[in-house]
Image (cartoon, helix red, strand yellow):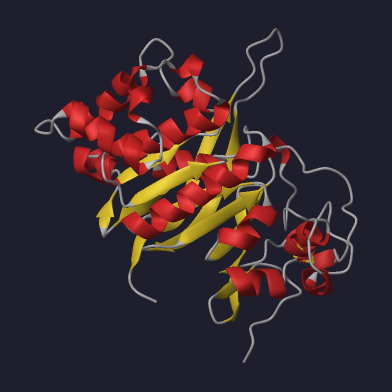
Length: 327
Ligand code: SF4
């Protein structure tokens, strides 16, 4: 593998919550992200998968510069994203863009599509002709030039998301964070948006940090996949390895319940595992391994010690007391 372009080291994000009602309680830290270390390589699609409350979106917002980490670092091409203690420098903002789940709220409803696209162009490309650059962006995402005069409410959900993708590309980024970019769309248009994203990645050599709860989608498009549970990464591996040889009980549980379309894929699925209970609240993370309240293989050590992440096979990492590194 080449050098990573993005490195997260022991990344933590804690939110302090208090009680403002009649009964005052001591503020507590909610550990939304708790010691995550990941690397992204140029040109790959890195799938960051987890249930609601797992911390995957908090990681996206830190990489996008919207949240400052409580501790740990995020390096992009060797530079700390939060160097000097201030916000992200303008050149790093240009390099890393984000596409949100809901295109309706991420576009300004009172501005035309041209005006929405002009905002990043004026900031990051002040010397370029805005009209020509807008037309180029619309062509890049296969939208007709006439769309520049439309308002967001005149577009379908899929078209709004395509405009949001065009706006993210306005700054010529190298890393695009895709935060559940298709989950608010009709199934009929999800495929169209995914195909567009894949084409843009090939043509522009983009790196994607793809945040999703949809493991089936990652099977088709991810170069590597990481699974998060209650603020921590449980397992990370290359796409094919991840789906053919899942090691962590939580990954096996998730994969055992996803629908597949071929007998070949069905044969690779882990035996059906029925989860015990619901994901605990991030306010009340169990001691020891945080998956111990739902894991079918739980044993005494799991209640006392949090397992360390180990490399099981080449570039395949997981954290579980039952797992040992391959010699
Ligand atoms: Fe299950 Fe224990 Fe492994 Fe956690 S450490 S995943 S509870 S077996």
